[in-house]
Amino acid sequence: MEMVFFSSWESLLRTLIVGVLAYAVLVAFLRISGNRTLSKMNAFDLIVTVALGSTLATVLLSKDIALAEGALALALLISLQFVITWLSVRFSWVKRMITGEPLMLLYRGEYLTAALRQARVTKEEVRSAVRSSGVGQLSAVEAVVLETDGSLSVVKRGEEGDGSSLSGVRGPH
Image 1: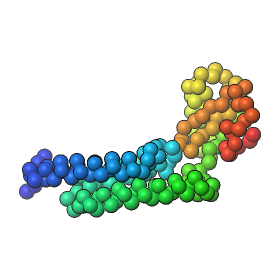
Image 2: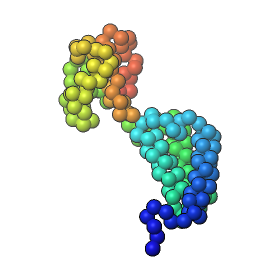
Image 3: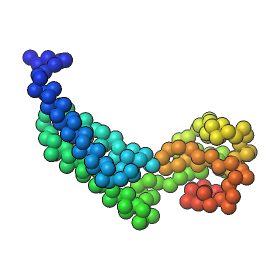
Image 4: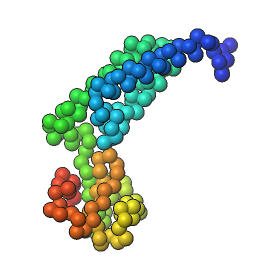
């Protein structure tokens, strides 16, 4: 019967060696692929980051996965992410498909109820974002935008300039 807390010195040694090597492979791949690979710019980037962590954990803990197979899996995830981001920079339809579009939730102090419902964001969450930006009243806000990474951006009235930061945002303006 296998013990719950300790199975063998051999398995511990394997985890140590494969862990160090898999970690080194992942770091090397990430350095080659650039900073974007681990950025959390949108949901797609977050998914890739989680998948990389899951793959690394599987390589570390599963005796059925050889280091070479794990390295290939890591390289495949990073390569696919590179290709998708390369395409999204060059083709706007790919970018929209992968990242979505920012959505305006409040405009000139007024809630956009349909947008709030669509985004599943409450008025309380919008007010919290407004307070966090240092604004005391909704009428002082030009827009609150749900960004593609899930964060809320607040544009203060009088600071919107020509409104160019709101271009590409779904909603009235």
